[in-house]
Length: 547
Image (tube, rainbow, N blue to C red):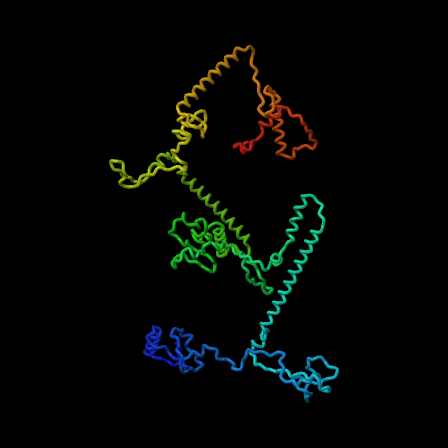
């Protein structure tokens, strides 16, 4: 409420004034009028509505809030440049002797000095200029753009556009000349070089859109002005958000949901906290826990602890560490602090264990049956075995399909074990994708095994009848084109294995390699067998544990 500068008021008058102001704000009483008969908004604060004491305001008014120091003669108009008023037919007394105008003297004449002035020729009398005077304020006198005609800037734009157009035409002419020169030239090269020339021709075929890259539309860029010390330059800011994605603040339109800060583009909490995490398409993004998870995890948490440690050092007066000025020093001190803390913790633990002993080490291990078998869960059943009270323990399920029989089998794979091999119990086959033969297959396998056993016994009896000791022979196991009767010498094979070990040691340590190497192309069967025995297969699961 606008009030005048009045004197002291009694308590009763002050109370009535307060009640009147409250009634005006509630709309129960008419608003206060100012000197001009206009209504004053009752919600205007008192420090704005009350006039200063030195204005001696008798009536309520808001004139003190308006700009009352205004010069009525002030104008924003400017000089009419080049305007002419009157042109005389003959020379007048007191006019310029050079051009004949009355508005300036001969010394101030801006026209080219004539051979014979207008004073003596009375010809080509220049018209008088329009002389104007303006009362400018402090800012108007120092405004360097005062009087500037903005329509003239269109000429500047037109001049730059003409220059760009001429540049594009020049580039196009140069490219056409290069293409014409390329086509007229006879090409006598091989087919391999033809492909390279075609690429060069494609690179030269720039149309007008490619020549003028500045006018290409790129919707993945956002052009904006970037302030610099030189006055500003146009920079490109990449827009990393896909336009098809739903914005964070549109996931939940409830006003009481997670707060979204538009200035920092961050949402501190989950906008849909009650929804199923499996149904959220953003389950792997930061919106599950909000943007606060970045501040309380990973490197952000380490950086926070580093800042706290630097502040604590400064407060305790141990070392003056400024995180922003010397980050490497602060990080080194924090690392030493963590090492000392861990060392002290370990030392305290060892001291306590030496004094009181380690009770956990003396206790025998609890059997797994007792550890996982007992629980406090109570389940009550009826006579039929149905659960009356509590919850029955569910049987753990496997991630693999259970009781699925394939290829006419009546048991699953792995239900039978023999000779270090898994198989099917129904047909006793060890091939996983085999077709079930049932009892007939088992009988056939037993007959085949009996026949094999009989043949082995007959062969052993025949070999025993031969006279003389039997010399054990080692047959070669490498290659496919070797004769079947090739036998390896054990002594030569042992010597070849030693040489192969020495050769591999030399390959590992290049410092033991000799300068004069004698190469032998003749490879014996024993050396080939030693190389095969020492070679490491890529599919061998134990290859990393050999050396």
